[in-house]
Picture 1: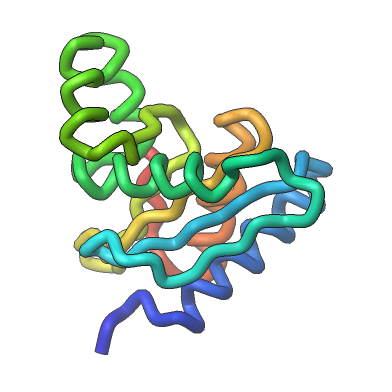
Picture 2: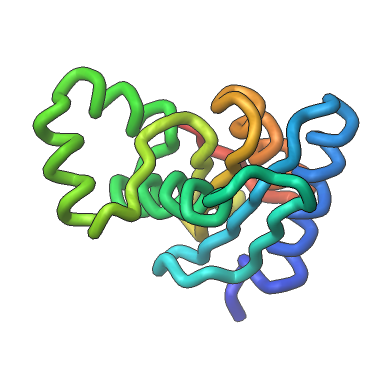
Length: 143
């Protein structure tokens, strides 16, 4: 049985949104992907800006593709912009290399998925993702 079930993914979203509401963040989009990159769950809040799904998905997808959290993806792309451009091409444009993408790991450290959050600042997006992942009983790796 997969560890990142629909029920767990929905709890990540619920806890991430609760964190966002408590912190009075702008409306968010949260996407939860499993380890192979398939979407398990997604929520886009009312009154959010356009393309929240695509941005959140690109953050999570980039983390999975690189095997590192969004902060590390961001750092690598800043250090090597040509590499970042190549990755964007390889990912078919589904690659957003900024914080707000967070790997989901199990207790033994295996990557079981990723969460992408978009709607507020990258730091706040990341905090909401981490809060959701931890509330669901998983380990968050933001890089």
